[in-house]
Image (cartoon, rainbow, N blue to C red; front, top):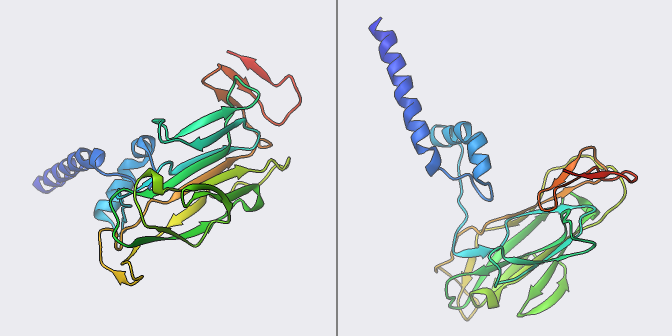
Length: 245
């Protein structure tokens, strides 16, 4: 009887410990508060007591938007802006209702001063294929339209040193299978001196945050809601296909 009581007490105390520390555990990369609320118990427990290795991305490099959501028949273009709290400005076509982003720009830049240069390896996992185009839209202090390189190289810090990616959806008119999000993996950084020799410095070995991109297929079944204009719409069908609530 005492053994049963002590076992129950242990489980009760363990539950208190787990729930006490859940707010302190951050999901890796770009997960948000909703993810912690829904999945925090099981994932946090696994990370604390299981064998999962968690690698945190560094705050020494800014990625202005880590999670990008595009919509095939959206009508909003987002461009990076240092003056906006959101990190971007919007241009709406055929408004005033905003149905989602057709193109989105997010930027990367080091926050701390650099002596020499810092390199960030880049790997793109293009799960959507030709349905999303990805370009290097800003580099070397000027607008650009280049293929995303395998390495981002920085000699300065702050927004003036930024390099930006622009993701644009292609509306193919087809119903496509569900795939995993596209990812732009920003790897562990390499620091070099003015002579180009690898050295140990502020950024050495730190991992920049990755970027995740999703695409909403407007031919897929479902109804979407604009919380801005109080409108519901079934995309991809003939009109009338919407209503105000």
